[in-house]
Image (cartoon, rainbow, N blue to C red):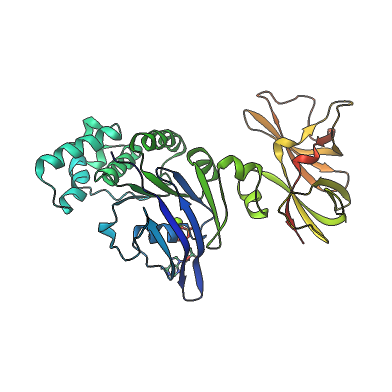
Length: 361
Ligand SMILES: Nc1ncnc2c1ncn2[C@@H]1O[C@H](COP(=O)(O)OP(=O)(O)O)[C@@H](O)[C@H]1O
Ligand SMILES: [Mg+2]
């Protein structure tokens, strides 16, 4: 299969009357990169993808593929494969005929079609299933057939809109591995849409986080997790404690806030506006420790365990501080600690560097 294309999206916007479905989207996607559009429902992911596919005409902006604008190019001439959540296979046709369909539309010869269909079936590891009807396959297998159909004309770009959304949890997990391996085998550039942060984190080279039609931040999964650019990204990616309060000391490198009577301190980050009145920090669940005895920590707060949830590889503790403020801590380990019960008194500890400023006023 051929390699991927570079996609340069600039100032791309789509307005429906007063609705800004997509607004000023800028994204430079490298050859063979796996980029995910992640965001809540209605944030403009599908709209942006449909403009790349050619089904939606932009209000403004441009899309270059390998340096050339594709905005005037009709859908069937864009050399882009697509898979949707509802994979829409033709039920009355065999699997092989389903996959052959886009090639017949393109007028390829019979022997070439047969060869390419066989190759596409092998690519999704369903080489033996060409003669079956879609109904005779599992949901995951049907989704792989839809993938084969999108890949059979060897597109340099593959667009996937919530392709795993209709599958149950276990199958979805399997398909993640399949997709990743497939990406390595074909080398196509992949744009993947999901509202599921875990899918985004595990599959992507880079993630573009969407909200209200705009990209909030683009970066590698670990960058978004460790250094969210704003409150929205901090809250949307991973679980976190968001702490908002009145700035009591904002002069130096460390900012201190008063949140409901409890004082919190975290580092000022470069490139961030210095807060003067209000500030919000993010503090990840795994940054919080339940301190034993005289264990050292930059910051500490006393409280009571209000509730705990055992989640297999860790336990989450909801701790109500003396001030009334609540923090959630995640303690690793596959055995819950018997000494930590509801109403147990605990001291939480964390490092100043773990508190990241994500909003300033
Ligand atoms: N054809 C349309 N006409 C009017 N509004 C639309 C149309 N398509 C999408 N929208 C609106 O644009 C916004 C973004 O939609 P969409 O791109 O489908 O979001 P997502 O895929 O992130 O869930 C939503 O508010 C949606 O209602
Ligand atoms: Mg959508």
